Amino acid sequence: MSPYATHLEQQIRSQPEQLERVLTSGSVKAQVHAAAEALHRVRRIWVVGTGTSQHAANLGAAMLQDAGRSAHSVSSMQFVKNAPIVGPQDGVVVITHTGETAYALAARALAFSAGLQTVTICREGSPFNDAIQTVEKETSETYTVSYTTALLALGMLASAMGADTITADKLALVPGSVRNALESGGRERSRCARRLECWRRVTTPSSSSMERRYRSPRRTTCSR
Image (cartoon, rainbow, N blue to C red; front, top):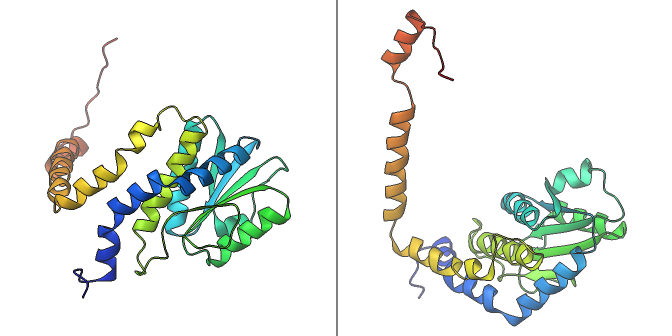
């Protein structure tokens, strides 16, 4: 019998172990190296995904920009139905955990048929030759471990392509940081929430002060 109440809890709790596995796996390192070598030759990189994968694409594009690359994120649907102006020297990174998302597959097929360099970040056991494989297909409909491992794979890719701020030492801290967050039982989140609330009170004018400002506008001067 599983010690977890739900599949979602099981996937959430599996994150530190799976992040550590992705980070140290020889096969994943080889896949990241191959992807970096392929993308080094392209002019621009389009990072595409759907839903949670699109959010990962947004962050992944920022990581690749840190490597000095012209990287842009776009939803899989937009890439297919209203494609940006893509040149023959561009590359595409498709993020799809299941490897079954319709628009992600269509985006990948479109890029592949156009002869663009294509990299896919997806689950283990996917049939794609150009893939960086992360974890097995999630058992929960709410994706967690597939999302965080996809982000780690993107970080590893950006690091391999020369990102200054995404070093191996910093990536090595990720599994432990996630483990600490899970073991804190929400205490760290509570501390952050309290800090945000204090900041909100300081920076948000009260209704009375807003009323005084409205009734008695003052001319302000700035010292130079």
